Length: 83
Image 1: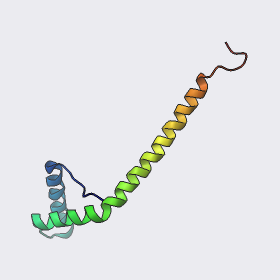
Image 2 (image 1 turned 180 degrees about the horizontal axis):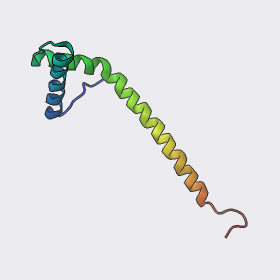
Image 3 (image 1 turned 30 degrees about the vertical axis):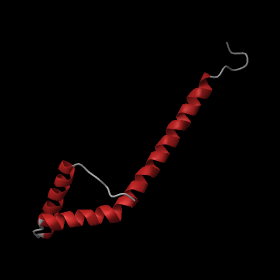
Image 4 (image 1 turned 45 degrees about the horizontal axis):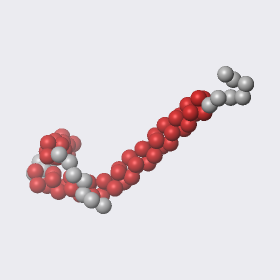
């Protein structure tokens, strides 16, 4: 699987959040490199699971949308005796 790419601004914001989390929740100071390593670890470990769940959610939504579309198409059919 390809590594997850994100815009630099988004990555920087994520690193800020990681450092803030460690400071507030654990009373630990985490350097930028350590935060970046932690982010890479979680992207590598959790990324595929999150990605696959998103695809599954997309499949479900698409199936629901297609079912609704199919019902709409059937509603347009001409019925015997209907003009």
